[in-house]
Image (cartoon, rainbow, N blue to C red; front, top):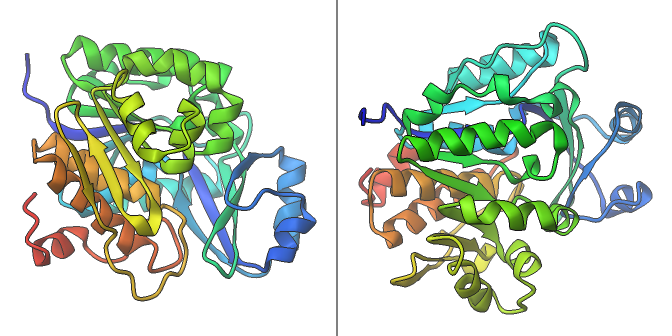
Length: 331
């Protein structure tokens, strides 16, 4: 077996985020459940966009954010996801490659535009997302390079792909290529509402997952357990490694042999929780890829999450490798 050339390859939606600070009334006016992600069509996306105050546009997408976080930590990462050859597509391409992430998925030359996610950030720093998938929702098997997947220690799948008929073949190719090469497959649950909607699809995929990540709401939703620790124990019966984040209460993980918990990293100014789970995944997965102890993996995840929630946007603005070094965390 060839030695891996990448720590992690991530598979997900290529999305440009549009973020703005709003009050709770605007979220309610659109009939949205605060703190969740809703898929919308292009027309609905335009309605929400027109109601938003001035904001910022940054490249996003859950799996792409994780890849960028891994690169900021000093790891090697690639991303698989689809853009259109349009203005937002160019923004996404430039921003992601500038982080050092390998991105070679060809852009579509026809069809729907590049995906965008309208993120309403309320005063409590909670984010409510309205996502128009556009061409990102058309990721198919031909877009997945098996050789790229086989060259990564871990293949990380964004939960928002699970249950989408258009992504079914792409996921199957990625999972098969990783396991055929003797690599591990990781999955994030992504959103409790999405887990509830796609419960059967998640349940069917879990036996193929080696590493599972989610927050406590997602873990409760997939297991039916009210207690996060019971949910963690239940999930490790199916997935060899499970990590659950608990916001300000920190995070816990189990590999079936030991269960470890770490506190959250202190955050002076909580600005925007967008990307917290994505960046936690970056630190945790890079730790696993580099064969670090479970506690070190959790601490790397907590550190990366703390950095991203201290500012607007879902990607690091400070070198995570430098922050980790300051904390004595070796990568």
